[in-house]
Length: 242
Image (tube, rainbow, N blue to C red; front, side, top):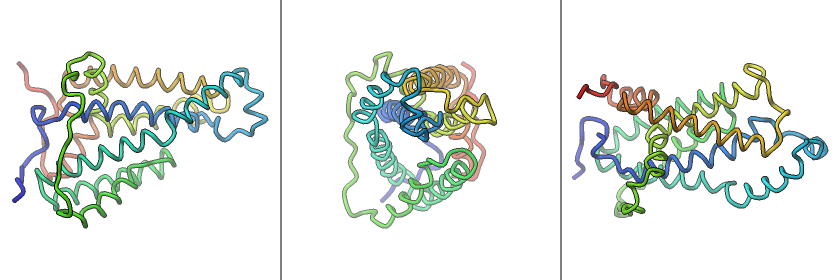
């Protein structure tokens, strides 16, 4: 029988390795998306070749193709499946379905108003379909890198991973603010390598912001809202004073 818990996962119940992998996959997703935000992907071959960084761009694009394209969405999907198993085990099918319906709304709004490359809507639909196969296999969680989770780099990556939804959406907002006419309008002026360097700079900012945020708050802002709508009640977001 499933253990039906009445609240979201606490800090002690979290698997840091999952947050770490979410943070790692956020880097890859941003590296895949920012050349499109920067509109480099939509330039003609002649326009790409006319960029001052064209020679470096070709090398960087080849490296991205080998190491990034399609790889990090796979990790994100795997983590989604692990989360699916954990939520079902702790809370049951009904709450999971409600959680996926809310994610579907978030993904739809993100798709319609911010970024056409949204993945959240697809995950939500996939999550609902997965409920049809509950019980077909045993749920097991293989924990990797446990002996190394104390490393500073891992802790830094885990911070944005704990706020993966907030950071995923904010990556799109940063892309719009930097490259589209609503913001600085830098689109088409960046070569591929500059777009990727901007990606890494933005992720460093997100990591620092996540570390600072989590010193004072228990959840990311969107994670907090998602949890309250899922459980239908208020949860405090501020950390209790020590």
